[in-house]
Image (cartoon, rainbow, N blue to C red; front, top):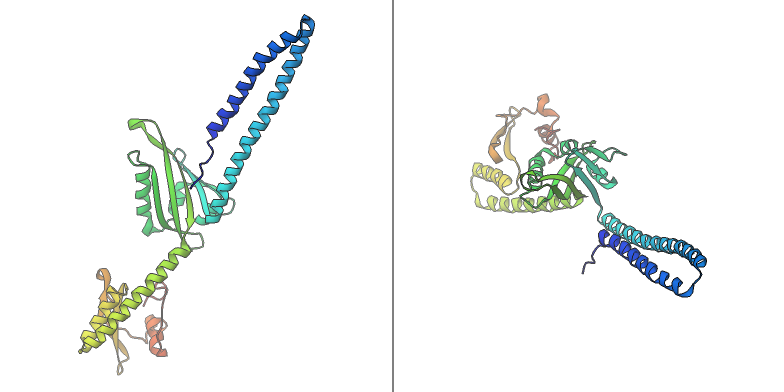
Length: 312
């Protein structure tokens, strides 16, 4: 069961209500009591003065304890909320739609990779760090959330690129508040949380990676048993690698031992991808120190995890 957070309006009304009640009872009954006990007019005025000072003292002490109790409850609630945020490693932020500024706490700063000491930045600079493959979907979510016709909530997972080039996955939850009515209703403030889910995403990708490799190997084994023709085997293996292994391109090349030229004999690519060379000369500088040349010279399996560096 979830406990309700204290309502700050109720706390303020409670303080004012008790103050008015005690003031009303003091004025009503203290005057009647003094009038009953004191007949001397001069003494009556003197006691009334003391009574006024007593009222100020007592109500001042009452206000102190009431406000302190309310403040302590608010601080305790904020501390509890911060502990929950820290336990979940959640950051908090605000987006002021009028100024276009993005305000955030220390953890959100770390999530987005902003410089130390920076806790306010134009929202356009936040979007500039979003991975290009995720930007369109995120912008669509923001447009929908800032439309009064929808609930003002949005949730998104996207990649952010830090200044050092590292890529981090973030999970963002947000709520947008509006002001105005009818056609004049517009968004004024977005508040939300961010959480770094890079480790979780990498674990999911690793599981998916091994699952698709297992599926590809299983299909290749079946292909080897089924095929009797070499060309059919090469074509089928390339197709399996793309369709089950989810590779962008797979190709097979045979080395002509007389010329030393590697001739592609089978290929299959996703989305129309094609092997860009009709023949490969491992002796040329273009290939000699790259993946193909290394594999031919070493006689071992060579693996590349960065095609931006090893183009072949």
